[in-house]
Image (tube, rainbow, N blue to C red; front, side):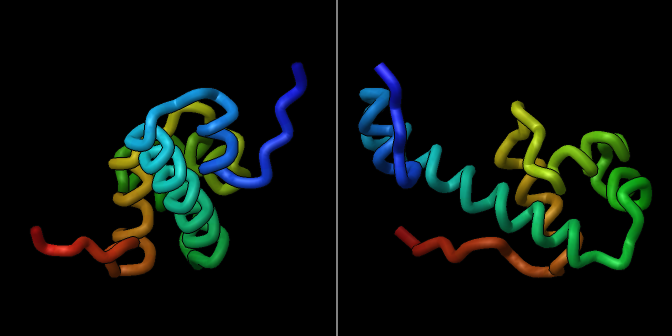
Length: 94
């Protein structure tokens, strides 16, 4: 069976994931795109970014090209906050 999903929510449904996993998958996807854009827009070299966030130049390059398979939400947030000097999302108080 070939899966062709148009978005992360549909992909989560196709993979029979629960709602929480679907939300996490969608959040990570959005953060990944935002981090890749922040790297591309940055005037810093990939090496400088890597030093600042505590990872390698090669990993920064892979994230910029959206080719990193196992990147954590924490690292994505760190990239966005470091390069854009802002929070990547708004959290509602509970």
